[in-house]
Length: 86
Image (cartoon, rainbow, N blue to C red; front, side, top):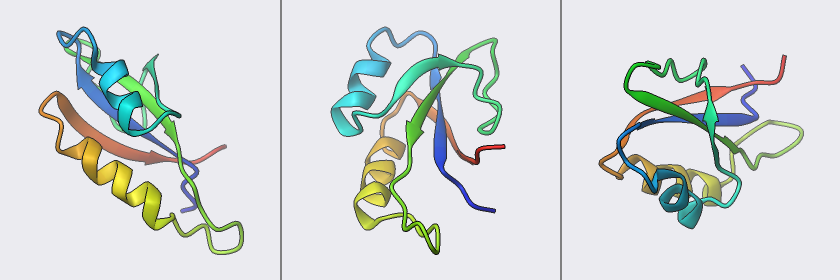
């Protein structure tokens, strides 16, 4: 599968979650369903971020992997999933 964006599920109770995520990755915006990451709408909000990748191989850049790793360490992030354009 050729992933071109990623989704993050965050706890709805964290008021500044989007701002904290954007401090790591400026492409992130929140308020999406989070279908690829399977966010639970009861207690999670979906956020969407762009992936940097090589056009030929679709390999994700080391820089982007670093950002995703930093995001995964935030205690309000509950899930991360990849997505591809249909």
